[in-house]
Image (cartoon, rainbow, N blue to C red; front, top):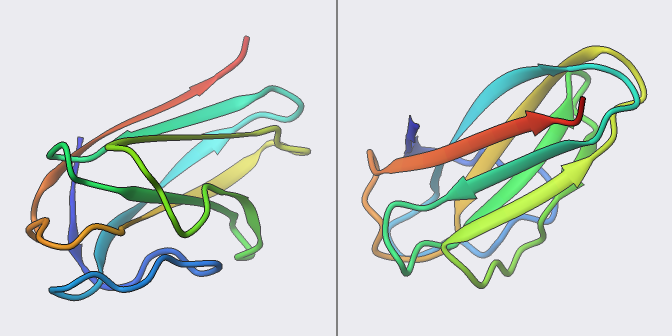
Length: 111
């Protein structure tokens, strides 16, 4: 679980800023080459609309759910080409979701 904070976290193809300003979170994870990674983020309330972006350590986007999420739970997948550290960035696209709200995050990798 991760708490949101004020700021812009998704770097490319970001959703429109909701009423109340930009907020979300960023965290990192390691992944190994050639094995599918699945990331799921569930927002704190049913009207939450989290946008997910994954970037490599150099800042290149490797996965992005797009700027118009339609559900409280959003998922993206990608397959890394090397063993490396990735940045998971999430922006809340719905208005009225408080900064400090808790998001459930799952990052799994295929065996």
